[in-house]
Length: 135
Image (cartoon, rainbow, N blue to C red):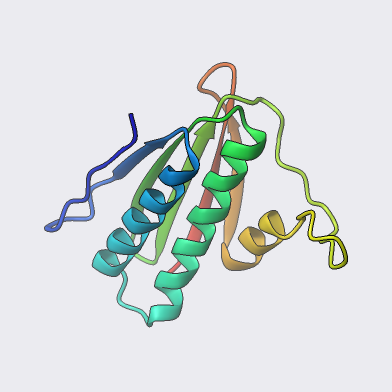
């Protein structure tokens, strides 16, 4: 079941689990609410968090085994979005397809908007992609 819990009084981590296209919308809503609560910056930073989360969970559904867990947490100057999926295969950078619309934009956008991207193994058999987005 897809779920999201958002804490209004503290920047406690937020977790969203998803296994459907509809869960992407819930992940975006959770990201927007969390980022609005913890950022001191302009709307552009909130939008950056939402876009990174959207790309991460969409890629996890599409390429990572059809199920994901998103965790949002905060540091003094960044929101950390961590997305786990079932595939051990690392994301790969592709040249964006400007002609046929077959993708290649997601990881490039994530790298541009985030200040740090790391990939760690697990939970078994998959991986977790962590992105720090400056606020």
